[in-house]
Amino acid sequence: MPLSCCRPDVVPLDKILPDEPLLMMGAGPVPIPQAVAHANSLVINHLGPTMARVIDQVKQMARYVFQSSSPYMLGVAGPGSAAMEMAVCNLVSPGDTVLSVVNGYFSGRMAEMARRAGGNVVEQLVPAGLCAQPDDVERALIAHHPKVLTIVQGETSNTTWNRMLPEICRVAAQHDCLVIVDTVCTLSTMPLEMDNWGVDAVITGGQKGLSSIPGVSLVAFSTRAFEHINNREHAPVQWCLDAKLANGFWNESKYHYTAPTSGILALHEALRLVCAETLEHRFERHLVCSEALQAGIEALGLELLVAKPARLNSVIGIKVPEGVNPDRVRQVMSDKHRVEIAGSFGLSILRIGQMGEQSRAHNLFRTLDALGSSMRECGAKVDVPHGMCELARHLAQRSGAL
Ligand SMILES: *Cc1c(COP(=O)(O)O)cnc(C)c1O
Image (cartoon, rainbow, N blue to C red):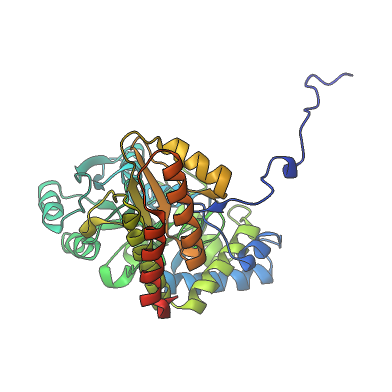
């Protein structure tokens, strides 16, 4: 019998992929270390003793990276957004009031997830270029008595940093409000102290600060949060994201769904490299690299999007000079320099990531040269040698951190 759909005429991957891989300097995914790539090429039994040891170590390392002694360190097969949805749909029940601090696109996504979980969501919009203020949050806590607060540490879409996050978490805890923090782009690039700050759920993806592969994520719940989950009247509708079922796999060796073993092995290696580097050194490396790159960009003659107090270091936003087409700049960077950076959702800006392996001196030089040369080719007045010089000067001053 003839088949009803004909065989497609496809080419092998090497005909699609560029001869020289692009240097991924956008807002994620980011380059991964060799150990992560190798681990990702392996498949093991998802329930055997080898997996049990891997899971045990991933949880230990996650506790260090999240700075938490909570037993509830859960992996998620899915993007950062799946981890986000897992936190939201397990902590928000229909009818719960939720306060969502919204700085931009991703923090807005959490508010939307809380609405879909049946929450009565109050959005607190933070004006562009500013960070959320504890006083404003406290006023909203008093006015609305939310059960859950959602907030992002670094808003990747417009490159703002909620610098006052620790104070905001403390205020929320005083008002008996559970706090969900999105650290997808910031985890392991800057301090995050889950227990000390009183955070109830921290979510992250693999492909940004941790320099692992996309598609396997982590969420950590506090013991207080997990009590709420255990006392829920109804299970969340999302079966795959049910935290109790996930906890069965992550803490009780039970089958939930077939875990993405390769991706978890990759995550294991990414976390191991964070532990080997130590958080202190890793934070310092990210700070030095990002600030040096920012200085280089300004020395080119370009303007950064966000003023210093609320500027995110893990993703740098750059204003595009009038008359210059940002998409064309990215095209030239990609075609001629093999460097990929990001545009943004509707804003006329370019974004360069400083997450994980992106924060290496050699990547900064290549990226800044590519940006400057491509800007010039697209009509911007930039001083490339001056930019490169400032980058080198800043890195030399603090070379001990690299
Ligand atoms: C990238 C990102 C997300 C979404 O992660 P996905 O893996 O694309 O789902 C959420 N929040 C922040 C802050 C991000 O940077």
